[in-house]
Image (cartoon, rainbow, N blue to C red; front, side):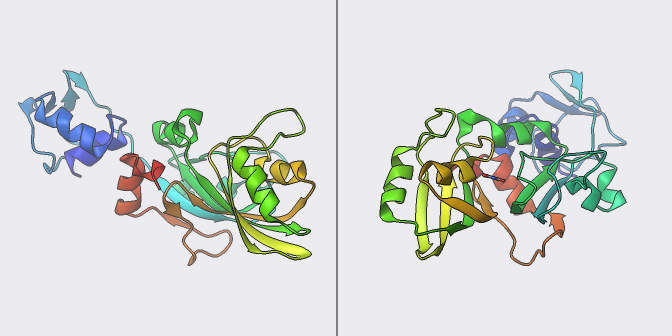
Length: 241
Ligand code: URA
């Protein structure tokens, strides 16, 4: 495995930051300074240190799931099926957990990982990671609703949401929309529509940062993130659109 990938996975920063760390001479492999980020190391057989501290390698896992309705975004539950129950045993052994939550009846893009740092940066309110949802709405969605979402709407508990970008795909008795929000309050999309007197009847997350739901994945299916997808997530490019 490349030394830069190993260090990025172990939480020493993005690939770019890790490159700088290597250049600075802080990294040793078997007591020899390694500066080239392309250097291959065997994490189980060689001793890697950063500023003299040994790096204990833990295998990481990054999955993209098309969450089906009817399962909960938790790691375990006595009564209900969880997204972890949908994983094959070989993927479960690395103890991945869902990055954030989708409601039981919500479908779509869910990232599962055992990388606490990545999860934290995707969920941190400070990072404003955009999340895009496709939804079906009972009732006519109007440009006034789009304008209201742009300003932020007040939820029933008095919370004023950050601006949301509403795209009306179809307006009718049953409307279809896309909504992008940068926060993740409990039931946020449903509550934003309630704030304008409408009800969400179907909800699917289609995008998180710059990561799109793979349309090839059927409900309940999942796959490992590609190197490119993971690099973009770890480099934080996921936060810019
Ligand atoms: N907003 C909701 O209302 N539900 C979800 O599952 C996600 C966002």
